[in-house]
Length: 293
Image (cartoon, rainbow, N blue to C red; front, side):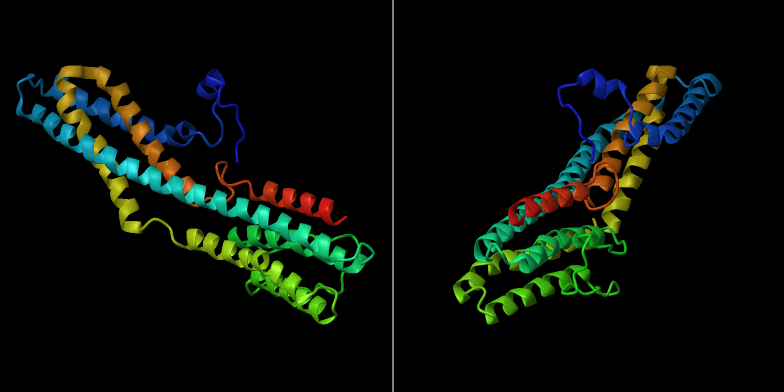
């Protein structure tokens, strides 16, 4: 995720980053400009149509399509941003629940119980790491302490790793209860945090595995293409070659909105505007280590 100063207007306007849509759309902008130039040349210099030509009625079509396409793009970007913001709230709750569980285990476990404290200091951040790499469809590589932990087994990476991490935490808490290290009331007190881990995982998977319907996404792209293709037909008789930069600008705005929506609708990837899950995972590890040290 890109961190930036919201008040730095000049920097935002004149500095182009990898995530900027202008860099990605530049070849298509050149093609659209060349297409518009051809239309203007054919209508004005070759066919020499007058401004009263019936082809100018295409401006009426453009007026009607402008309202429709603006409504579609507003709905598209709002839907994509809602998915991004929901993902951010879910990871925010994961950070809070990890801290809460660490604080409760710090209060429940004796200060001299180094083994169990080290276990929870390792396993709580491990869930965030497993969830991050699970959502990014990578092989989970769990970061452990420098010392070996025989109580933490090697997880089966062919199965759902976050489930295995959460199950291991539940098993450990149950063992502590049977060994009377914690009481039944204390076991109930940490149940909400333990349950919230998989609730967060399931909600993130719902966003990840349910993209915007294919037909809707393709329809918007076709609509933008139709709008840009017909835009020069009626306006070239009045604007002439001034229409070339105008059409290029309109295409850039419409296509950029669609590209931004495509990028943020899946907030768990590695794009520049996706959630900083790696940074949040590192914060969880640091906070839990500070609490259970």
